[in-house]
Length: 201
Image 1 (tube, helix red, strand yellow):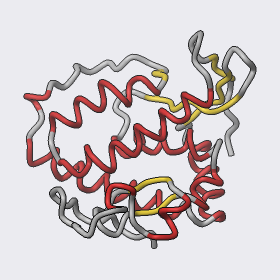
Image 2: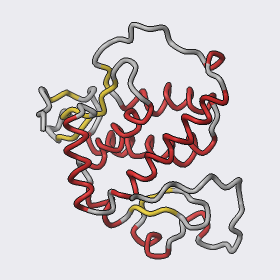
Image 3: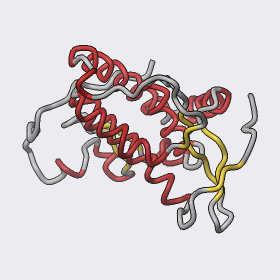
């Protein structure tokens, strides 16, 4: 395993706990909303918003920025579908402690995260962005930053809702297999249902 070469300081006022929660939220937003939508506008909005605010870019991209108009809808749909399935399989596999350890080692070896520290001295992990980085690795970096600090949540709280296929963290709802949005309703088709995530093999 290649060690992270430095400990990065979070911006003044930022806290590791809050930052890590933001990484989790951004990853879940991709799986539950952006990936399921298969829309280029949603992808660009996610990259410019939730994703960008939770990563550190180590080098400026030498290629031009791709605008939403330059992205072919069919290509974006395929990319989002494939990436969502891969991220979904990874998330569900992290319920297994052994798989979680393997994932952590692979994320560190790939340089997807670096150590970080806030003003109070609390340490965590920050996702790293590189030029021409795959969308899959961008989302995985968010997952890694969260998982390396809170692996226990994945083992005891992570589940996929049987009604809407959403991925969530909730210990009580995991036992029921249904998310809070469907807790008090027998209606199973409240919104367009995304394709099921691939099960971990």
